[in-house]
Image (cartoon, rainbow, N blue to C red; front, side, top):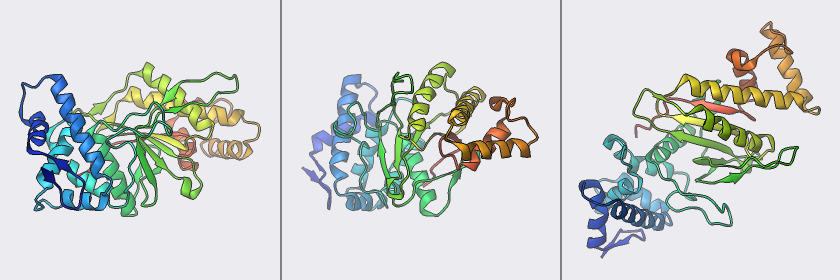
Length: 320
């Protein structure tokens, strides 16, 4: 029986051998791999109950239990196309997250049904490393910049959770627009702000491209959440760059949000700011096509510090 010192990790040698086989054997069936992955995730979820002890083991390679915990984490997050170099970042990445964030709903097991009935737990290595990068930036008092020039980071006092599915609220016509699921949800309620949603995309290529039609549908669903105040903003994050079509689709969604704010008869502050920015750029506020004038659109998004809009962050890479 294996018991990690200071943690609740209980794993006999046979169970660990079976789990480890996911990394060294190529003859396992898909069912065997799924079972081993599930067991690794269950064991890690149990360990999250003692986050400080877990962090100490993950960051101390000399600890007698480090190698086993590191293996469990790799098995829990590995996919068929996961580069081996990314797996070696997982222990320091989770250790970085646990430095200030001890309650991590949805990391290895889905959140309770009373909080989100259709939620799923984290299932991709990049969700760990990208979250670590955002917490690392926040801890250092630094912020990533989205393409619009908006700051993005996770503060020490922010609550973070994974895999929530949220139902869009009805629009004026009473129609629902389905659900949307941010990979990461940053809770800002402690400072009186709505949560920030983040979708994380990893690729081994130079560009990450999201098919335009499903992306447009997803953006429409998320826009409803933004317009009804369920989200402050929603950001797409990648380790590489997003393709031009993906950028264009997101820019069009932001342009539609601008139209919604201009149509709001009570949103006079936004209208004044919009007219000011158009005037400064010598464009007619009634004639401009914002989806074709990204410079002006970015200025509008930046003037609101990204609140109420979509964001794009590229080259987000955790190096340890």
